[in-house]
Length: 179
Image (cartoon, rainbow, N blue to C red; front, side, top):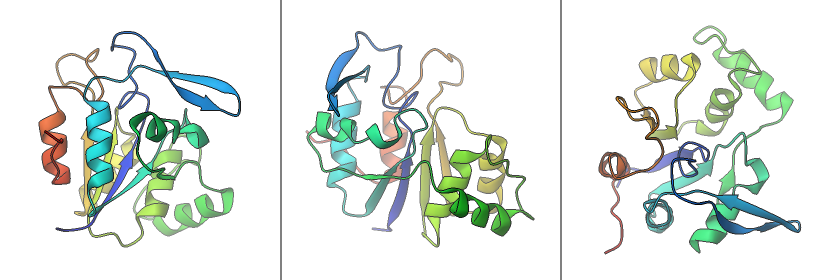
């Protein structure tokens, strides 16, 4: 199976306010952390974690270093936290892609971070609740990149990993939920 570098956002993807009640995910440095995952999230995270061909990287501007509380909640090993990156790394990427993409250090922070971590990966999947123009442009000229938007096309209130999109996400990643 072809190796996949997976970039996964949290808010709007695995954590959505449209799901029922908030639940305690765990604690970090003595603070309780709550989230609202759909029923698809825990089996999805477990399936990703089981897949030997997928290297998952958290790409969350809200959770940042707290991202792995989701792994503990799901009972899986911690993943790399890819956002944010250092100013120096961001400058390097901005210089490298400056002729192909218009990158703003603030507005395009996630795109810059994904570009940094992507390196020469053969297949890149980025799951996010809406993408900046820089990511859309990158995906147009780089055939390795597959963007998955978790905002429902006809119902913007239906977002995240849900029953309406789980099959297409699993198919793109080449995985299945456990029975």
